[in-house]
Length: 430
Ligand code: SAH
Image (tube, rainbow, N blue to C red; front, side, top):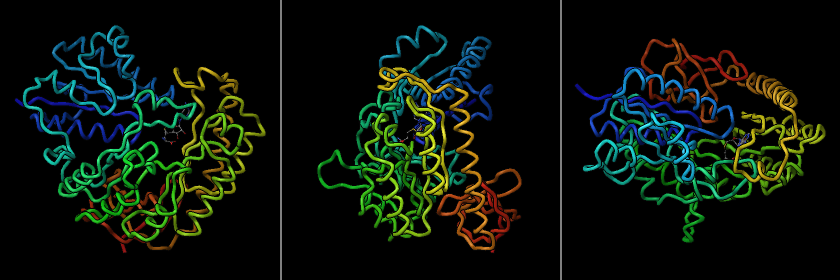
């Protein structure tokens, strides 16, 4: 009988990419995916600690794993991702003795060694090896590809630099090989990932730039769409804007976190720009690409955020009418500059009030914005089923649900929007 594995992934797109790499390696070793965690011989928990909420989720799953391991001592348990920092491993081992293997973000070798390290397959992207686990081939039409690993920007609230290490760009040839392999295995849409993806290549000193990488990825046979995230306003160059504007396959969807609309808060976050500079950049992007979608991230209740400071964020959101905003309450992360130097002085109920106010604003502006889509025709890449409907996304990353008897998985279709809402639209095939 074949051994089975199950991967639990919490957190960002980068973690999902790491889980995919690991799944491909597991299946090359002869493992098969289990239908559910409790049926697997090997369980990997891929953790996130970006906010306390994510960390709590990981801790909760660790408790469940402890129970599973007690009833089945032969179960292999591995924990990876941002909960596992270099310096934290000894403490984790002591706390969670039932875990067989700990490995940091993007690491797979410790598990491969644990399983018997003699004939390690090459990592995906190296030219050999698969990019998708065979069990997902022909069924997975979108994939995340890390291009910048780690981060050196050191926003004061953020735990990522200490968990994922300093910023380094992956060689362009590795990335393009991985994209080629994904396309061969049926993937239609590629999202290039980095904490500050628009810094891609700045550590090479040979003029390599995200704009070139995007164009080359878009030119690969079988690739229908290319996306990239997350951009930082200070590195979003005119060349990048021009490339997005003039390359059909690069989706007009920019993920560019503002984090706050108040300059003092932005300075304490060490973001490196003012609200006015951010506004000007958004205006420039929209002037060049009128149909662009602009998505953002916002933190409310950062240390020292007054009511007036919060209202600056509120007004910025009201004015810029984002296409999506991920709004989070500030969460103290041990070891970050903010945790060391700034008092977490906005009460939790107040943070929640501010979050809810921004969510309401977002809802309202999305409803209005999307209402204008009714009756129009959009292009969708159909990713799969969502209940009885097919789920597709527009180039702007808007979700459209359609009912159709045909198998539309992986297809690019034209659809007419029949009903709209803040988060999903409904449509029919043209
Ligand atoms: N590197 C990206 C994304 C980092 S994590 C960037 O440049 O922003 C994704 C989002 O989580 C961030 O944009 C931020 O809004 C949020 N986040 C990060 N640390 C946080 C913290 N300590 N508390 C609350 N939200 C946080």
